Length: 331
Image 1 (tube, rainbow, N blue to C red):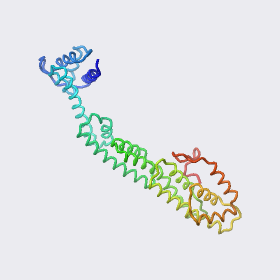
Image 2: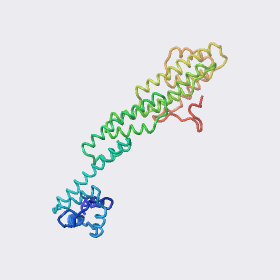
Image 3: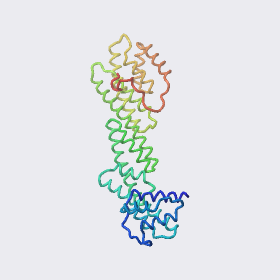
C-alpha cells in the first residue's frame, strides 16, 4: 500500500468515530455503499468487509468529516475521488478547529485556545492563523505585564507566567521576544531576592546594633548567577550595593571605629569580604577598612585566602543555603 493510500485509509477510519448523513440506496447517489465501492476500487488492500463498513457508516451519520467523504463518492475517477477525500478532510478539520477556538474564547478559556493554535498549526486556514497570531500577541502583552509586576514588587517568581512567556514567544516565532521572555524570567527570580535585601537593610539601619543582612550577598549572588544580564539587573545591583554596603555598611563601620574597638568586628570582616568579592568601589569605605585592618589583620587575610580558593561561580542558580534553612533566616 502506498503512503498516500495509507493516509486515505486512515482518514476513512474516522467513519467509526463519526456520524453520517441519511443516504438513499441508489448506487449512483453518494452513499455508504458507493463510498465503500470507491474505496475498495481506489485504495490498495483496503481490507474492510462491506457489510460491517456500511452498517457502521449508516449508524453514525451526522459528523461533517464523514458527510464530506460520502459526498466524494460521486467521483468515479480514483484520482478525483482521492483528491476530494484529502481536500474535504482539510476543510472539515479547519472548521472544527475554528469552532473549537471560538468556543474557548467565548468561554474565556484563553489557554485552551492557545494550545489549539499551537498544536494544530498545520491544519489552520489563513484566517485562523491570523486569529491565532492576534491572540498570541494579546496573551504576550498580558503575561509580560504580569511578569513586570511580579518582578518590580519583589513577589515570588511565577513559574506559570515564565513558562507562558516562553511558550507564546516560541509560538510567535519571534526571536527577540524569546530572548525577552528569558530575561523576564531571570528578572522575576532576582526580584524577590533584591526586595528582601533592601527591606532587611532598611530594618537593620533602625536597630541599636545593626548588622549587614545575609540577604544582601544572597541578592548579589542571585544577580551574578543569571545567564542573562539585563539593564534592570544592573540597576538592582547598584541599589543593593548602595543600601547594604555604601550606606548601612559604612555607617556600621564608622560607629564601630568611633567606639575605639579592641578587637575585630564581624561586620568589618563581612564588609571587607563583600567589597573584595563583588568589586565594590568606594573611597570612604576603602579608608574605613584601612583603619579597621589594624584590628582585623588576621580576619582580612583569611578572607583573602578564602576568596582566592573559592571557584568562580558558573551561571545558574545562586548558592543554596544549608538544608532546612531559608535564605532569609541566615544572618
